[in-house]
Structure formats: structure tokens, C-alpha cells
Image 1 (spheres, rainbow, N blue to C red):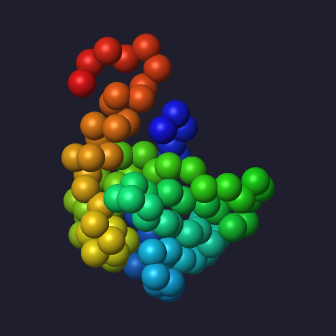
Image 2 (image 1 turned 180 degrees about the vertical axis):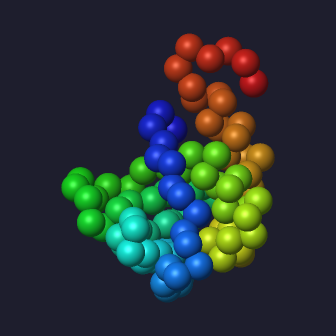
Length: 100
């Protein structure tokens, strides 16, 4: 995973719609965003931005979802997301980084 995106914790006014392994989050500040879980890894795409491609979500964002007890964090837990797994893969794929 060479590239990751930071996704803010959605505000309480955001609308969340679960569609299987995809969660659509719509908020006035950030527009529409979809989060997808694939083999325990989290990906996101903003529907209001081009290109609309799936990008891995940064471990810092995932950690914030869990730490703030966000409904997004609950969704990710239900989908089997492991923060430790995300961190290990992120560290091992960082270019030029030899620390794990």
C-alpha cells in the first residue's frame, strides 16, 4: 500500500448508509464518501472528487474512528478491521523505512 488518504471522523450530523461491505458517509463539510473493507483493509473514495478511485485509508484515520467511538469505527469492527494489521502493513510498505 504505497498511497493512503486521511479521512476525518464524520460529524454527528453526517448521514451514514451501510451497503454490505461499503459505508456511504455524507456530510455538508466533506460531501459524499464511501468506505470499503476488503480482506480486513480499509479503502475510501470521495464521490464529489475526481478521480473516483479507491485509495487505502491511513492508519491514523482508522485509529481516530476507533478512539472517538465513531459509528464508522463500529462499522469497521463489524467488518473485521484490525488496526494492528493496518499499522504493520503500512510500516512495511513505507519507502525507505526499515523500522517495523
